[in-house]
Image 1 (cartoon, rainbow, N blue to C red):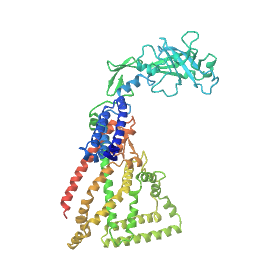
Image 2 (image 1 turned 180 degrees about the horizontal axis):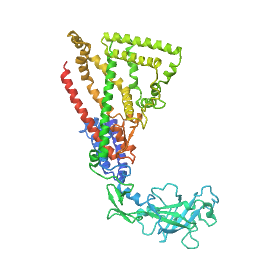
Image 3 (image 1 turned 90 degrees about the vertical axis):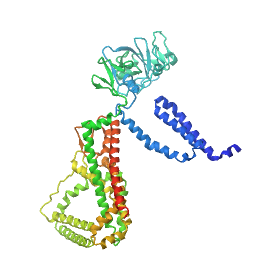
Image 4 (image 1 turned 30 degrees about the horizontal axis):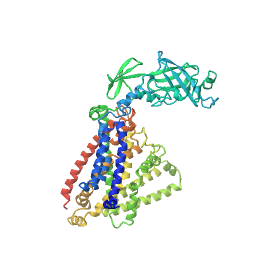
Length: 625
């Protein structure tokens, strides 16, 4: 009892946790060894030993507080980076994601490549079934097939139809061919017919019964005559025994035979040799699938930099990506700052309520908001196009009293907006004045459509988010929706930054004779940029990788054809990488996508470094004010 009290409960809890961790690792070691995962095995073993040392050694006590964070750092950041680097240096893609040994097994075994020539071996076929099933509903119910080759090998198992899927690792109930090794015997089912209860009364080598199954007579075979020509018995390592008659079958053998000495495949069908080239066997210029993953060095990086069919789309997407991110950030900043300046006036009533409303686009779930905007911008049924077509204005213009009532109301609203704009102009509230004049202009346009000669905006059908639409409108839709979604963020940070600027500096500028515009441009804006410039850079990096907006709104479309990689007019670099990895027309090009992510990283890092140097200069110039 004193032994347990000496160490305390904490020590025993720590010991139990380490024992549990060590037990899990020990249980994983055989599986990792079988899979050949040497790197993962070494990493796990070394990491586990390090954790044991840290928590059992008194000298390493300070590191105990760092280990949990370091473990998550390695799992969540370092390991994905290392894995991405490794993938970028290989040919990992659809058709090249397994090992070479696995690829050879799939090419030389199973039902992927089988040939049935005129010289194919004809084998004897015998059918067995439980005598109790006289007229089964399913022709394959409890049906067994026995095949005997010319060499006397017997293969016994359950058949399938040709239309059903070929099993990756077919198995038999028996038997092992003569001279087979242990591995082959295990695949065949190293069980003799006598062990299955076979009885051969006449001594011809073909049993009349096997266990509870009896050999079908010619009259009994009529119950499966409808599917007899579709029966197949998969024979591991040999191919398929395909039934032809009631008593014979053709052995469709593997098309390819691997020669380990020369590392080639022999094609029995064309009588040619297939050499291994860059992760695939190539026969007469044709690549065989599946291939295998293979280390290729910097070839993927070189393709992006030198291959015209990849480099041109990459540069084109990069230019649009920069335009998109810069446009969105500038529009969000202008709108957010303008609204922050407008609501800075303490004499405005209900400022808290208005500010809360402006935060809704930013607080709403982006996934749902983008889908709502996609419905609003639908070219055929979307409310935006329906309003722009102004069909409702045409119906209003054809009426009598509603038209004049609406006209009087709109004229009153326009006059009120102009009066408010004039008042704001006298108070030097430029943004509010511009909004008032813009509102009056919109009302004037409505009045023209109601009282004017025609309706020129009928049947607009702007292809905002149409997959095959116009690139200009698709890009404009992406910019406007992203701007609408993010301007509350800038409104919020600008509101806080404006409140942090000392008012005495503005008052001093006004006393010196500066106009309101000069006060804003020479004093307020530089001090504002010192506080929000890093946030602007972070927003640029965020919008530079705004994958969700592009994917949900336009899916990168309209598509562009004629290049070696798939991409669309509104694709940005991150969605372009997604297309390479998932949406590629010839399968996922994971290695090329991984290489492209490094270009994206260096691009964003370079732009951010330059921007931070600029913000540092702002701090040096205005930080001491």
